[in-house]
Every structure is written in C-alpha cells, then in structure tokens.
View (cartoon, rainbow, N blue to C red):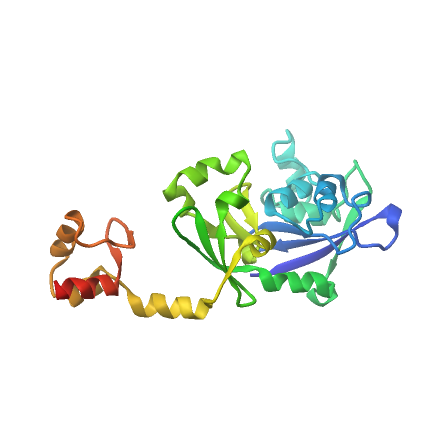
Length: 271
C-alpha cells in the first residue's frame, strides 16, 4: 500500500504545519492528521470543528471533502478539455491536487510532500492504535484487535448514537458487515458510516486475548463443509439436511459452502 504524505501550510502562517494529508495510492483514499497543538483558528475551515472538539484524526469522508474543495469538480462542463490540457487520461483527484499544489482560489493553503520520517512522533504513534481486525458479536458489540496488540470489546449502541447509524444497529446482517478501513483508520459500513480507531480504543473494554490467539483459534477450531463431511463421515447432502433440521448451526453460510465450529461437529459424533 503506497503512502504519500504532505504537510498542509498557509501563506499567512509562514512555515507552520497546520495539518498532514496522507494519501493511500492503491486505495485512492485521503486522511488528514492534525498536529497535537492544532489551533481551530489556523486549521482549514472545513476541519476546524474537529480541532475545536479535540479530534486529531479526520476520517476519509471529511478528508476527501477538503480535497474536493481544492480541485476541479468532475461535473464541470469542459472537464474533458481541462484533463486533456493537463495530460490526464481520466479524472484523478490526487493528480489534480498535485498539479495545483493543493491551492485553490478561496484560501491560501497549499501542500508540500514529505517522507514518513518527517512526521512528528506523536502522529507516528497514532498508527500503533490502528485496527487490525474486527469481529461482530451479538447485541451490537464488536471485538476489535489493535495494531499494538490490545484487544477491546466495543458496544456500538454507546458509540454510534447519531441517527445515521440507526439502520445499521437495527439490522444484524448490516451490523455484521463492519469492515476495517484503509490502514486500520477505523471500522466502516460504507461512506460516512465509520468510527475512528481512536474512538474505539478510548471507548472499548480491554479483553485478555491477542489477535494471534484469535487466528490460531480460527485456524484450529473452524472448518468448512468439506471438513464437516470428513468429521461426520457423511455427504454434503447430509450436512444440508442437518442444517435444515436445526441440528447443525453454521457460523457463516454461502451458496456453495458453510463454516462450522469443530466443537459442534464433534458433539454431533457423540450423539
């Protein structure tokens, strides 16, 4: 995953870094990190509310919104001619941002590329609490594994209190679709339906389990339909019949296969 890093500066604040823009080239995703001493009055307007609330990491939705303010909109009438004049084969937010050095007519902000080593230690340390894995549990709980080895149980009823999350919280299938954001910035259910890693880390309850232990459990104690047939010495048709009659309870099902706890299959052998 190729990462490009830029400082965000202003002509009126000399060389002071107001924020850091990170771009994940393969995912085509932007994120903005605010420095520890971020001042809401210096921070770009669309991001100032985050600084005011003490938030240091700006999610992909609002980071992209800041970028969109600084580039030619994709629905501009003469966009084809503009792209051709700048040797662009297609509309590319990142390339358009670079062409203008992040400048726009509405303000005096601009960007400068830097290497990872130039990121302040405080911001580098934030990457230690990025999300490595997420598992949906019952009652709108998530099991979150973090990059620093910490594991937390997070009740999303307490965290996702905004109206936009209510449909997710009311549907077990939608809730279970939670996925890790690019580079572990948080978990997401879709555009602007995400929760940052920092919020999850601060709100979750510590659990004494590591992601390595979880992976070992999954590798050793979960099997697919082929494995179930071998353990029970039966056909796929028998497996489907056991599921239909409520005698087996797959962890996950698809049109062609299932996943089972080996312990449940072993218990069937004893019955």
